[in-house]
Amino acid sequence: MRLLLLGANGQLGQCFKQVSAGFPEFEIQAYGRELDITQPGLVAEVLHDSYYDVVINCAAYNQVDLAEVEPNKADAVNHLAVRHLAELVKQQGGFLVHFSTDYVFDGLKNRPYLETDQPFPLNVYGQTKLAGENAMLAVNPPGLVVRTSWLFSPFSSNFLTRMRQLGATRSSIQVVSDQIGSPTCALDLAQAVFDIVSFRQKTLDENPNHQAWWSTQVCHFANKGQASWAELATEIMRLSELDCKVLPISTADYGVKACRPAYSVLDATQIQAWLPGPIRSWREALGGHDLFLTSPVR
Ligand SMILES: NC(=O)c1ccc[n+]([C@@H]2O[C@H](COP(=O)([O-])OP(=O)(O)OC[C@H]3O[C@@H](n4cnc5c(N)ncnc54)[C@H](OP(=O)(O)O)[C@@H]3O)[C@@H](O)[C@H]2O)c1
Image 1 (cartoon, rainbow, N blue to C red):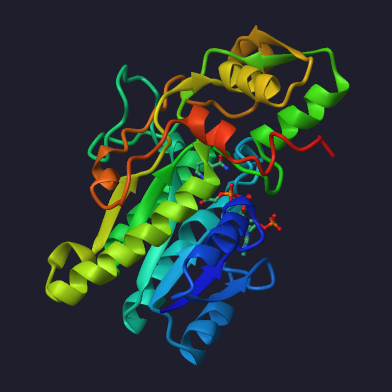
Image 2 (cartoon, rainbow, N blue to C red; image 1 turned 90 degrees about the vertical axis):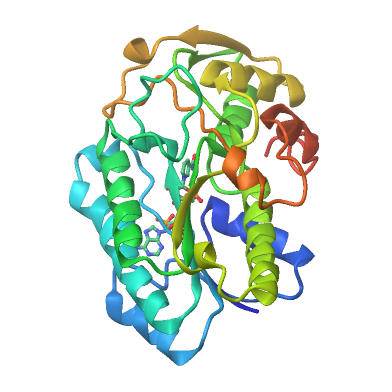
């Protein structure tokens, strides 16, 4: 199967490249920033030049606070480019996997968010990601919008890598304790997407008219369990054997531009049915990849 990976040098893109070693049946063409997804002509050229069975879009404008002051830039990547990509993939006949966020929710619920819950983003980033979801649903190519949250991995700059860097040089650090979410290993997410694409192919081989796989579906992927940023930081320090005390602080005292949901745990029950094994907990995932926690901080 031919697979086109966009945004390949970001955190999740690098996880896809790493995990792809376990899926030799996929022939991967990967593009980073050099293929600017906001340039419709460039993306069209790539998709017209070759057929791709699967297109995975990891490109995104992810700077939650900066998006408040440059909403048009965020919208161009997270919304308008997604609509165009969905149109191209629909014309071509492939399967589009796109990612969205827990920040489409307002955080007022007191139980994990389901796919059917009403989104209500509190910040510009969440608004542009929701607009991207809705654009893809409106065009309706065969595909998945996978909402995920609080990604960590050994790649790029993310909460895990930042905490490890700070923990290596400081004796204490203040971390927000009044936001609760689902920390998620980006490597687990990439593995799950490969598994789902394989599962879809198997399902269609058995029943080519299986309707659900010919339209766009929204699903949630997150590791099991929940945590505050402070709890996650504490576990990172413990596993990394860093002698840095995590001091809980409120969101108000931390002071950032964009509002964030106080509670954004995702319910991933639906996606579980398409996976070969149970989704593990964030604690297990954090401790399980000896790629990073047992290696010294660089
Ligand atoms: N990170 C999280 O905690 C989190 C949480 C929930 C959902 N998500 C979603 O998960 C997906 C992957 O996130 P991530 O953590 O891998 O983000 P990331 O590390 O910021 O990667 C995004 C990549 O997209 C690239 N990019 C930005 N604008 C582009 C454009 N116009 N054309 C092509 N590439 C462009 C970026 O390049 P530059 O670095 O050069 O700008 C970067 O390499 C995104 O859809 C994100 O919204 C992430």
